[in-house]
Each structure stands twice: as C-alpha cells, then as structure tokens.
Length: 266
Image 1 (tube, one colour):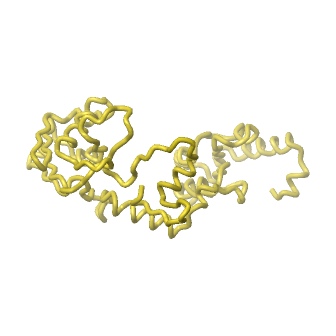
Image 2 (cartoon, one colour; image 1 turned 90 degrees about the horizontal axis):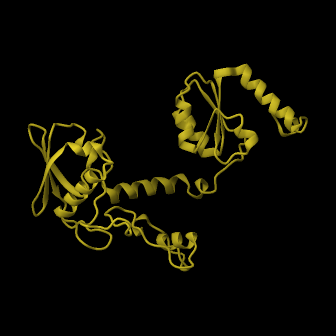
Image 3 (cartoon, one colour; image 1 turned 90 degrees about the vertical axis):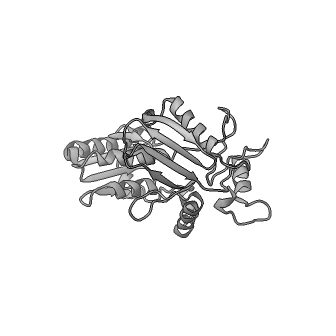
C-alpha cells in the first residue's frame, strides 16, 4: 500500500483491512512486533519480543509464506537469514533503520570480528574444534574420565596479576557451587600443579570440553566486585559526571585527540 493509498482510509478502516488480511491468509501470514512498536501495531502481532527472539519465533512457523517484521532493517534481515527459501520476509517501512546498526560498515565489522578472534583465541577451527586459550593444550585419558589442562604461560588478568592453576580451580569450583552449571556436578576431583589443572569426572562426558569455556577469575574474587577476567573486554567504571558516550569514547581511544579506537584497548 502506497502512502497515497493510506491517506484514503481512516485509522479504523486500516485496522479492519489488516484484520481482514490476517483472517484470509490464516497461518500463511505471520506478523512479528518489536517491543517498541505502537499499540495499534502490536495488537495485530502474532509474537511480541526483542529482535532475535522474534526471528527465532519465526522459525517455529514453517507454514507462514509471508513474514511481516514490524521493526527495523537488521531485525528483518535476521529473520530472513533464519527463514526458509520458500518464505518471504517483509519490512513494512523500508526507511526504518537503526542508528547503532548503521554506525559500522561491513569492513569495520569484519575487522572487529577478526580482532576478537585473535585476542580471544577461542575461534573454532574448520572442523569445529576449540582452539586453546588460557590453556595452551590439554590431554584426555583413555577412559575419558581425566582432563589435564596445561596453562599457557604469561596469561594475565585485567588487573595485571598472572593466571595460576589455583585461579582456574577456584573458578571451576565457584561455578559448581553456584548451582547454575549442572553439567559440572559430574566433576569428582580437581587437582592442580604449578602449571596445570587436572579434572577427574564421575562419568565420561563427550561435551565436557565445551563447559570449560567458563570465565576464569582471580582466586577469592569477591561477588559484586568490579569484574576481572582475561578476555578482550576490560571493565572500566564510568567516571563521575561522565556520560555513557564519553566513557565509550575514552575506552575506544577516541578522545579529544581523535585517535582511532582498537578493540585491544578495551
């Protein structure tokens, strides 16, 4: 419907035309409404939520030939990626953009992705195998019960202290005690050496390595204290009376000097 056509109808007439189209198309039509849409739009939505949640909702409706995403460009693009070739995703307002999504071009996004991979060291290889990070290598016993992780020398926390085997063991134990990592209940014992951590399981678990991507923090790091880790993103508290934008510019190295920001500065 063109802008000129819209002006021909009152608000109530437009509402009725939408209800009629939904009734006629049935399950062949799926309308997704983002949280921030107006009530007169949300009332027609089959699902209401945030951008990725809505895109996932769309995958649950394979019979929908037409997916109407009431949001902005990148949201509809995400739904289009997850949809089947037979489905058509429509963005009602083609001028609906997101200023944050428009801040970076594809070259900048690809460069940022590559930097994160280099810094984190956790990108999977071509076969989907984990690439070592804090541990430079590991060994698995023949019975699949004992995992021995050899720590990479020189890895430091954001506060400058070196990562030790005790830090790793403490972090794993803390995750176990939290009750949020049920898979870690399978751990029987944790032994440490000067440069390794050995974990013995109660039963073999082929997915155990994936659980060892949990965050490593310094031993006895207090709950509620400023986050301290080993990853590429460092927590820096905002200064008094400093705006969020100012803090972000400072972290990215884009202060008054206009220096180019780099992910390794975070």
